[in-house]
Length: 183
Image (cartoon, rainbow, N blue to C red):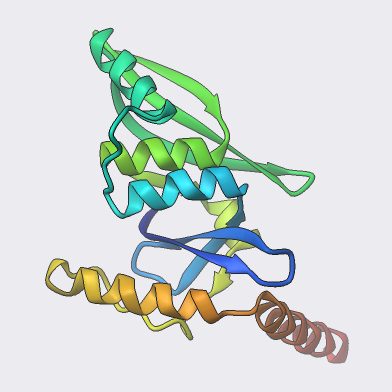
């Protein structure tokens, strides 16, 4: 089963100084954090903010080629994690035939945002790697307040410290383990 992503935003892990993408699972307080490279974060930020560049960047070039060849992007799925590396697929369609392309999540996310296609996460990934982001100041999807919500979320993430989140989940995990041991 798949879960749809309804909010995507980025922050910086101040400990590792690495960009982090947060994918919020639709109608939940579960977010999937994915660490990406600085270059990919730059392109993703441009896509999220719908900023145009004077010349096509690599992802724009790819989208132009696909469109010229009659392909349409349908969705992306983040579907696996091995050795702390996420895997994803891009789903294309041409002449009623579905084509699935292996991709890094960062590239797939950039294409999805630029193309405004749905982003999905496998249930198991959301369950195993998702974190409770209910403490992040963002409400449910509403087009009127979308820009304000993004700004609030962005401000929160600019100041967040991954150690605080790790401590929260580590401590929470210890409480659960202690409860399990007491049964």
